Length: 196
Image 1: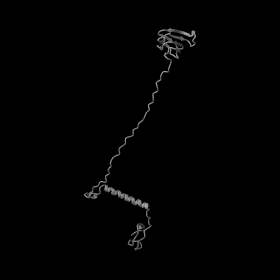
Image 2 (image 1 turned 120 degrees about the horizontal axis):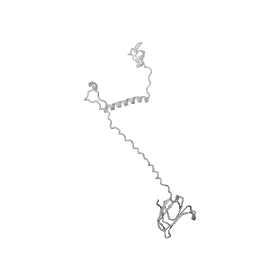
Image 3 (image 1 turned 30 degrees about the horizontal axis):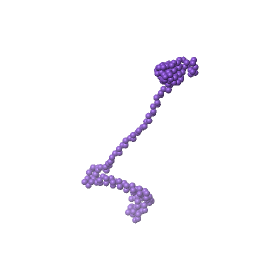
Image 4 (image 1 turned 135 degrees about the vertical axis):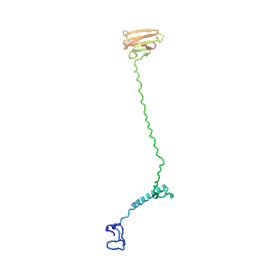
């Protein structure tokens, strides 16, 4: 016999025993449920169709059932599931090559000695020893022409007779030692070169 809390399970018929007697017509169901929206219905039925499709593909991929084999339940052996085959492993790409360009710093130029006083000079002119020419002993080949070679050491550049320290007229090779601060005057002589 149905109880009042069982009334929500669907319509009741006259053949169902009811409290208070038999009824010849269906008892209307409880509150009617609403139909699902078309989007929900599509989603539900579409998902069910997709699952059925996947199952069908899985069975087709496994080759279906073999008529020569017995059912797994009958013989107690489990049939293997579908085989998954991987058709190749991804190859690792080599690491990129990094090239670093290093620009070489130019070497600083070697320091050359500051041009100091000359160690060789022409046979004509007047020179300050220590500024124009270096101090030391100089040698010449002699006269540069037919009139002879004249040289003079002086304590200043005044040209006065009393400023002369030493002088000479050469017809052949000669030497003279010059000290810093002196003036050296030479006329018609070959080139003078420092010898020591």
